[in-house]
Image (cartoon, rainbow, N blue to C red; front, top):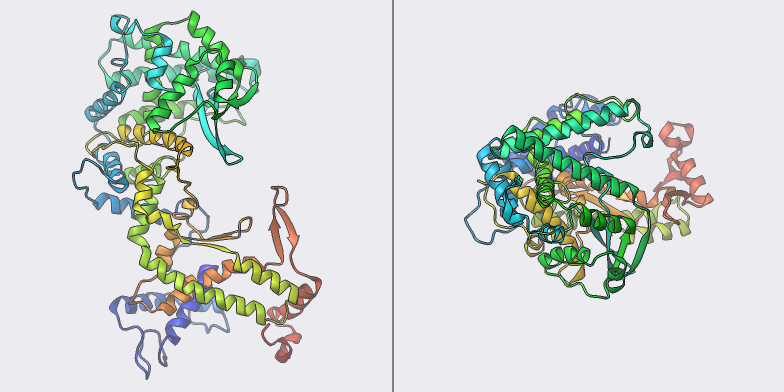
Length: 608
């Protein structure tokens, strides 16, 4: 509805922008403000969709009588048109060969790799092999004949691969100081488990449990066939070893007591059953090139898990089995990379193991979120917040709503904001106290127009992908995806040094709709929406006041709404913001909206 009203005001501003006009696009006696071909075409497009009624008789019919467009009513994290536009931009983009690609180059290469190498099995094999070689644990899958790897202990193996799949960690700030939290892997990390059937209240769970394990075994076996040449016996042996070890770790994790300890690194090291857990974590710390000292705060959850897992590996070490399992988890993560032959196997597994929580029945239908358009699949995955959303938002903004466009809207905003405050001060229905509160709130509104300013700061955006190596578009997307995931983990560790950057408000950039966040009094107008609403010169600025201006005013009106959402204890609570005087005046004045007799005496409602 807001867009429809804005369209009506836009039409009025076209008519009144310059000269006297009897018809849209026709010149008045003072000349025509819309002389450019692009402007005239836009006027004709708008006029062709207007109805025959006059605005006062039927405003909706006047504005939208012959509307041909579509309205994207559901608010979404990503505007569909923006995703398609960005995919088209990346498809046409070219990257100059360079040893130090920037974030945009990495985005282009990743996207074109995803779309151009989608079905290439040979390139997939080479990319997976390249990633696994980085762990220096030999080829996958290892066979028992791999004597050179049998000398490695389980501690040495995990020090080569890092915390996963043994444990997970996260970094947060507590009282302005960073704290590392380490914990057992979640239940979702394990694809098979040793959970007792009685612990799960799903019908037909026994059947599902068996089918899930069989599907997982098939997933592993088909992956081995895809990536290397092994005999049926070898594939079966490796799959059984992987499932056996994963079940054991799942059982340890599910049985671990929920004990949490917090302290500095020195203290936590004394509580852990072996200091090698900290040594494993240190691998990622070194890769991120940050410093963690003895006084760094650490929180350990499920301390019992760490004790039991040390005992297990100390008494059940099979080096080849362990190497095959940890490398399999890396391959399994890469299988989530869209549009690769490996991803096809992953989706087959997911389709066979989807379960309806209500009935317990296994779902055999296709993935509801699956899209047959490879370009959109690739684009949507790259725009996940932990993959390349920032780079995508930056590139889209620079192409579709650049700094000059933003500066123009910011100039408009000054007039809009000033006029809005004038209306508050001059109206006759608000009490003096409510006017002061409203103006104070409007003065403190945080405006994010298009995107936060840092989105177009190339130095900042490039630094957010510094752990992603130079990978060409001729490599498999699985390889790009692996390094992008690792980059996300390492970026979180930068909180320990001055290079850490908080990506505040970036999620606004590609959202489908404008919004007003009452908790923080933030008015957000995404670049993805502005790219559709805003028109660059030579289109008259009056048209942008009619569209962009109308929407901004509607959002600003949230600051003077009668019912305000407050968050006194972190819980959303509706509070009546107006005084009794304001409420009474508004209710009386608004009677004219019902065409009641009180409206005939317009003198008493001046400036209402």
